[in-house]
Amino acid sequence: MRLSLSSAAAPDASLPELLQACARRGLSGLELVVGHGHGVDEALSTTDQEGVAGLIRESGVAICGIRIADLANSDLDATARLAADLDTPIVALCDDLSAALVAQAYETFAAAGAQLVLEHPTRPRVAEVLREMITPFGARNVLALGWSIRPGDDDPALVTSMLASAGPFLRYICLHGGGPESAQQTGQGVGTVMGRLALARYAGPLVLTPSTPKYRVVWNAWLGRAGGWGCGSKQSDNSLVTL
Amino acid sequence: MSDTINEPMQLDVRVIPPREKHPAIFQTFDALEPGESFILVNDHDPFPLRYQFEAERTGAFTWTYLEQGPQVWRVEIAKQ
Image 1: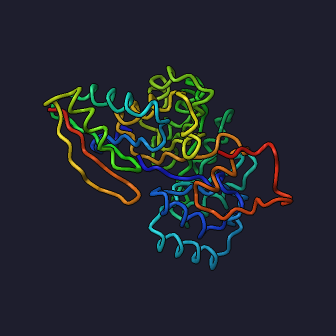
Image 2: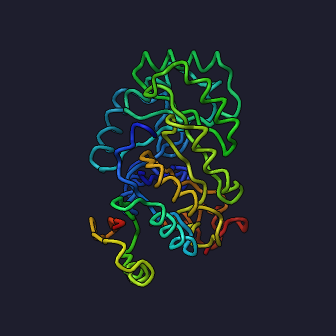
């Protein structure tokens, strides 16, 4: 697997900052969430895309995915073009999708030469339904499945059935927690998940993302970013956790 | 995952809480067939683990460093 970072760990960070943080932490990939400070989205001009591609090449860190908030309300053509231009999949959390939208997404992404990852939570039935939806299209390089894991909430006993439900379509995993949060966890099944993934020879990205925004200070420190949390800062917030 | 079946098994313990790390590593090792191996990935030299392997799996494993820092250590642990 390729350990990666989500921009959700530092939503205000620029693309160079995120790439540097990945390199510093030995992370091989970066997920870009549309709307964050890196500025990568469907509206990126060709010139800006070339600049982004250059930064990525120089960093040695791969962009493992671009996450959008909602597939149903996205501009599929523009999203697929962005994925093709940056040679990285689009990732969308899908709890409930229509077969018609999946078919339309397949046509659009196949025409653009791009990949779409439909991500599901730790619910085997949801994974099975998504797998049944994408199986008729047959082309795993266009449609794939992603799995969003929350070890603090999910039942570790479901790991085996989740892997079976997604089957060969599983190409993307998002792990909520981990990173600096793992130091304070007291046994929430992450080890079981990682062991099963190793034995299953999972080779795709494993994207680290905060389990909740309240850990943002901890993640900023872990990523080696400057503070900005001085006394009297408007960003000071007692709900934020420090270690 | 079927198209990645020839990939080496890789266990990245950087995301595993400290108290779960060694149990996960030994569970993975115990699930291997003789002759199989996995690559352990960590953010520091896991030499204390090697001592534990020598004590608890004496003569049953080999230990080969593939990468030694400064950010990432990779060790191939094979079952004999």
